[in-house]
Length: 180
Image (cartoon, rainbow, N blue to C red):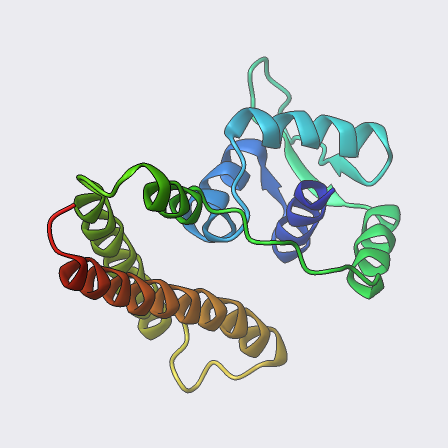
């Protein structure tokens, strides 16, 4: 149920067209809640049908013109209710961890290369998050909303630090194991 809430959040931050939303997902929200363009457009239709958002009237209606959406009172209320709800943490589902467990049974041949590849990807993501932090959160950006958004980014940074540390440890263990 979180995709509609991600869309409501994004639209409350700034009324947007579907295309603008998908671009914003690609640049920010998508780092921690991914969705395809089709999923976003489908969900916009459902939210509009449910009376949680509406498309803004266009100055000059034209065929094929992009719709811009805004959140209605019912959408804001749904998002507020969702924020206040209790929710259990979700168990981690990561194929790499499952593959490592499987490698313990069938052998580790070639798996260190995959760990190195993942390490490289996580290091790159960490670098990207740190650059985003520097660009988007200078000391003068200190509103409550900025601090909360920064906290989300800090969570991403800490997760990437975890993965780079764990993958480094895993690779060291593979070195101790010798050829697989």
